[in-house]
Structures are given as structure tokens and as C-alpha cells.
Amino acid sequence: MRKVRRNSTKALGQLFEKTTGCDVDKEVVVVANFSRGSKEIHTTEYRQNYFTAKKAAQDILKFGSELVILESTANYHMLFHDAFKAAGLNVKIINPLTVKALLRVEGKNDKADAITLAQLAASFSLRTSNMPDRIQREIRLHLRILDKVKRNRTQLINRVQSTLAAYGVTIYNIVKMNSVSGLGVLEGICRGMSSHEIIELFWKGNDKKVPELRENFGRVDELPDYVKLELQQTLDGIHLFNDEIASRERNAESLIEKLGLIEVVNIILSAPGVTPLLSLRIIGEMGVDFTERYSSAEKFVNAIGVCPANQVSGGKVVKKTANHGNKHLKVHLLNSVKGYCVSTKREHELKSFYDALRKRSTFKKAVSATARKLMIAIYAMVKYNQPYLTKAQLRGEPATAVKAAKA
Image 1 (cartoon, one colour):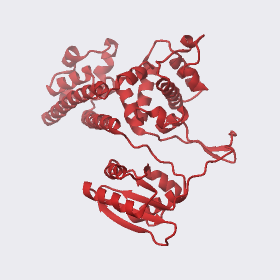
Image 2 (spheres, helix red, strand yellow):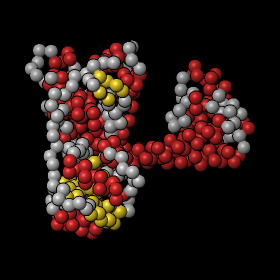
Image 3 (cartoon, rainbow, N blue to C red):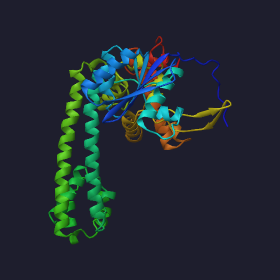
Image 4 (tube, rainbow, N blue to C red):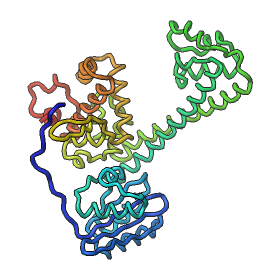
């Protein structure tokens, strides 16, 4: 096992006399007020609406709580967070997985969770989460709905493939069903055309794949009319989703100018493999001020989840695990890096880094390490307000963003 360097010091968390823990779900928020001088912990349930959120804030102010810990649950915690902030309370957001890792409560229920949060806040320096600001909320709303529409489209495409596979039609092995050729081939099947006619009219791909494509048409001539009708309805649904996705992507990209993000987005776009939508995701998930929220590039990439979360005991790595991070950003970041490193033919130091690592490691590790390297560079670029510079461009120049990131 590989030895690692131990930390010589450990920061002690501040101790509070009065704390409040809030367990959140879609209907009620359970508030527990904890005081070191009292043996009892009082809990109160508040309904999920604007007026009860304001009442909860006033009740906590009367109690004199020094710190309020609010459990994050989808978007249901945002109403109470905003109400507590408006009332001047010191409120922090915590991931429920963090609470479960620190302390398992027997007979789990909302009341017990709220009490646990209040007790932990009084004695531990908890690892809290960043609350999205106004800009982040608007970006997230657009992009997460866009992702949901894409998932719905994928379900329709999978339904088409499953229906065709029952009759031995496996053309999806040769052509992507949502491509120009794939949608054209599916249109020809719905019309009852022969495989020869479909290929002649709709195939836009490489002619070398035509013989293999013919073999994968299977019993396409034997498809019943009710199957063709179902395929046509599904095809219409895919076209509707494609139009909606294109419209939502345009609306999302328009946020760059609307929210005044042109300057920072242009800096991020100078990095290889980054698209406007990916730059928006970075800002939406991590904040436009992510260089202030995260004190170092290492903490930044750790929050995204593109670095290992190794478990260390006795100065040795006893278990290597993946870091979950922010799934709404991590998945798209890895896909973008994967597409850039695999498909691009242009020589670039980032691709060279991936190729060298791929020779001695697995594909997933190489992609993740390349994504980590890219995000460290983006952190430094935004922090020092300058575009991406290659090593060749940095030679003979003074300290720059990329050099500073390595320091």
C-alpha cells in the first residue's frame, strides 16, 4: 500500500451554545432547537409555504440560535433558506449523506434527523454546501429541464430499438437512431418501404457499411401495421423532442448575454473541448465566483468530483473510491473531455496528456484525470482573468495563470 503524507494540524470547529437543525421534505420542515444548558430538545413542524417559513425564521430568532443547519432536499430547502437569510440568521446547507456518514440514527424519522443536525452543529465543524445565487438558479432551471427533456427523448429512442429488435431489425448497431440517417431509415420503415429503397433514399453514411446495414434489416418486410403505427407515433415524438431541445439550447445560450457573463464565458471557452453550454454548467453549478467560493483549485475539482476520494488510515491508502461530486456537471464534463480526446485529430497538449495516460491506465481514469487537469486550468484562467495558454505560449513569459495553478 502506498504511504501518504499526514496532516500535522487540524482546525477545531467553533462551539455554539444554541443551534437549530432542520429536516426538509416536500410537505413539512421539522425544526429542532438545541441548547447546551437544556436537557430537552424542542421540535416544531412547519408546512412548506411562504408564510410558515417566515414564522419559522421568527421563532428561531426568538430562540436565539447562533447557527441554523438546513438539510438539502431537491429544491424544497430553498424557500426556508431564503426566509432564514432574509431574517438575518446564520444558515448553512448540508448534504444529507454527510449526516448519515457522521451518525446513524436508529429508527430514522424527520424528528430524529432534525435533532441530529442541531446536535452536530453545536459540536462539529460540519462540511456545508454552497447555496446557489440568483444567477445559478436561473441557469440551473434552464439546463436541468433541458437534461430532463433529453432523458425523455432517450426513452423514446430505446423504445424504438426494443420494438425493432423483436423482429430482428438491429440497424441501431450500425446507425444512431437520432442521426439524420437513423431518422430517415425509421421513416422509411414506417412507410413500409423495402430495405433497398430505404438505403437508396435515406442512407447518408459511409457506403462501406451498406452491406452490413442490409444484414441488420432482418424481417423488416414482416412488420405488422400496428407496429408501424406505433413506430410512426414514436418517431413524431422524437422530432418534437429534437425541436424542443434545439429551442431550449438556444434559450440557454442566450443567458450568457442576458446575465452579463460574456467576459467570463469567453475566458472559459478558450480552453480546449469546452462548449458554451458546458461553460454555463460550470457557472450554474459552481457559481460565477467559484474562485472565491473555493480557496484552491484542488478544492474546486474535488467539489466537481473529478479526483479520487481515497480512504487513508495509519498514513496509508487503504481504499480507493470514486468521488461523486456534482453529478449535474461531472457527467457533462467527462462526456465533453471524452469526445474531445477521442475524436479530435489536432495535436494539443491536453490530448497528448490523455494519450500518454491511456497507455498505462484505464479509459475512465485517463478521461477523469484529463478532466481534472482541464478544470484546474479553468480555475486559474478565471482567477487571473486570462485565456488558456499552452506551454509553448508560456515560455519566456512571467508568472501566468497556468504557472500559478501548479504552484
